[in-house]
Amino acid sequence: MSNGTESAVRLLILLAIGTMAGAAAFTHVHDLSVAHGQPDWIGWANAVAVELMAIYLGLEIRARRRAGRPVGLVGSLLVAFALLSLAAQVAEAEPSLWGWTVAAVPSLAFLALVKVVLSNAPAVPLAPEPEQPPSDWYDVPEQVTTDPEPERAADPVPPAVPVPAAISAPAAVLPPRGVVPSNRPHVVGIIR
View 1 (cartoon, rainbow, N blue to C red):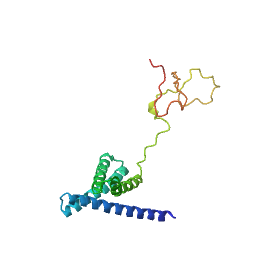
View 2 (view 1 turned 30 degrees about the vertical axis):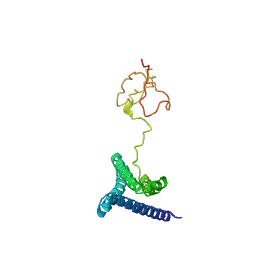
View 3 (view 1 turned 90 degrees about the vertical axis):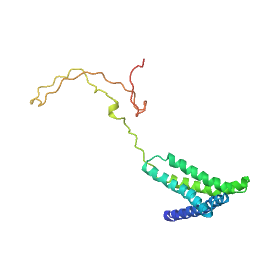
View 4 (view 1 turned 120 degrees about the horizontal axis):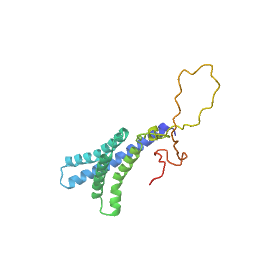
């Protein structure tokens, strides 16, 4: 099966499950609203509001993830609306374990689809961790020898720029690479 065919089959299955789960969820919310005194048109308005809000919030989470924005509040609202839909479906069911389970299937299918679709959202790439720590973490002086320079034979041409005298400084002692994690500054010495 080619990738295009597989994608088309997956889309058809997604649409079929989403349509059937949505129809059942719309009907349950509508029937519950009407059974509790709301006019027929308000029952449908409630169904549209609850079910489409859940779909919208799922799409909003996906957009926020792509933009690298926080999704906490929107995720909480999605769970709240999905639970509201689930409660409406269970309330309309026969009061038994199997009645509640069967009535919950459309909401659970919807939640599973939302999870699968949202998990395909491209992740925001994290900044790669540098292999070497930034150079400003260390102020390691260059190692300088204090031995006098050996005498050289007289150069036929003197150097154009005078060479400064060597400055002696203590050499830093660092542990072998890999002993201390490279993303942390090294501490050398005795702690009192």
